[in-house]
Image (tube, rainbow, N blue to C red; front, side, top):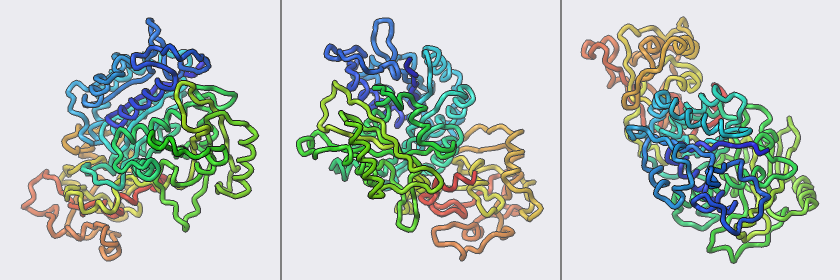
Length: 547
């Protein structure tokens, strides 16, 4: 009996990569854009029921739910040749169609209002499955809908389906290009907290690495979104081949995940694929062997994540799963693994076994292939902690001077304390009575936040949002011209750090009579800095361990 998987596509990025994914699956299973099995697709050894179901007229319909808060991308899908492939009842568009404005807070708060309509669709799709195994979520962590609404759905899916697996294909922002989304790093941080707590497996798709591979390996000078999405769809389809063309092992989602994730929090995976060729370079393809494919999969240039692997940091593998497609002799796999161990091509953690698992899968008989053997690597590697969450340093000067925050009590590790209350906002209203001293007698901010959040609901969002009611604000001190107790000197930090002392002269003190009662006090930050935190390109998954 097949273990069905429901695909959830969120936002512009999620729906675009999902669209390419379903195009790829239709081509591999011999299904036309209308959902009809082609006449040449006579081989019945594949399992279409994992991702498709048959309607009453025997059309194949994807087990997909398309969600977006603005209609542009979904309308383009409905105007494509694949418009009749999808179930129109599984498409949800927000009534106002205004989107989330690239704001995590807006997407999250809209999720609270529309979750009943969304889960009506998901529940109906789940009830139509014989043996539902889990969900696959396609989204971006940098926008508004994919990050905010995606975070809300992850939390609710955990509550509603606690025994079902949740795997995500999460697209990380490109660090090498300018972005007009000022709050992109905040969106990423806030989404990553939910991915850490509520997802069973996160496949990291780094736009930086995807663009590099398209340029260097596929020789595309200026890769388009469509070409990048095709690359992502190749990864997604290859990672599901053992589910759709089952063998003796790794024929369900839990079998794939269990071998890669030793502990629940170590579930961020990176992928690699080889050989990559475009249609123009098919004629110049090299001869592929199992050893050649497995050796190339271990090379950083073929990995779909741009990590900071330097010689000073001893990063190593936790587990590796290679999915080899093609007609392969198992003895070749055994010899290739021996050669990799002899040459020490992969360094593994000292506290666990050197686990390189190989799953063999057939290729689609309906798609011509220029390669005899191709391979996908899914790896759990410690360098995933160095993936950047936001802009690179070259973008620091391009960000408008429009980031504002009320400065809370200084703590040695501000990110862990601020993350729960900093949700992409521009200003907060501080009551005049909140002049509590930040001395040693004040309780830590995190414990105050936890106590306050239990009795305080999330406020309605305006612009980049007000977060909590005034009771939460009583744990924070408004800016003043005085120095906070325990605050370091501004000379203690590099130039790219920002400290209140550099802007205090321009800010009114709380007792200043020129400051109207109840008006928000704002602290103006330097571009691309977060108080005592370094620029956003240094905010990595390492910091999330502190949560």
